[in-house]
Image (cartoon, rainbow, N blue to C red):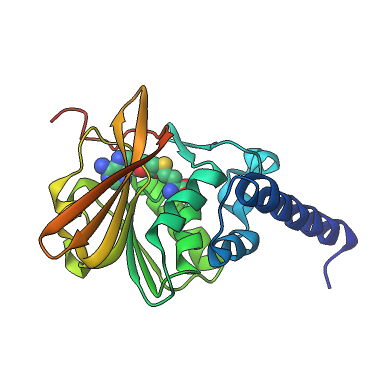
Length: 221
Ligand code: SAH
């Protein structure tokens, strides 16, 4: 039994999370019930730095150090909804950050691999994911522009950082019939692009405007 103070804080977090899903996601048109349910369950505040926990359920990104952020809840939901996961998939995320999006993905797919460039963030995310018992996620510290060829192909790839172009290795690691979701554009703004692979054909669809931190390394090539 938890002390009363902790119990009521846990209730507050849960209430904030249910409000977040209703007001920020359902009202704006997120319809995939599995995505909504996963975001009702994953404790987003646990992925935020201690001094930012009170703002974890706000309608905005949350700073996590190394000039990086946990993406806004709505963007996490949109990106994941576009992957159209049904439960059996193998998924790759580029840009682990706090590990929050990887945790949501882990509720919706069979296996999740997530690549982070900063070792401090990779280590932190690995620890939180382990503590929360999300065992089907593997955090890899590497340059995400290369994807993670060792475990490819992936039914879904989601990139949580923006690039002016789509890195070729990422396209090549999408399985036949699979999808890649990536923000494409410069620092002033991007569009979320969905690439669907059909054999050797890649169909690109531009969707909503968005604003992500840069995928490091793609600004200099
Ligand atoms: N999905 C994260 C938020 C990602 S923010 C979450 O849920 O918290 C973007 C992340 O991409 C940052 O952590 C940043 O360090 C990482 N990143 C940027 N460029 C990268 C690269 N070339 N390879 C791997 N990770 C990169």
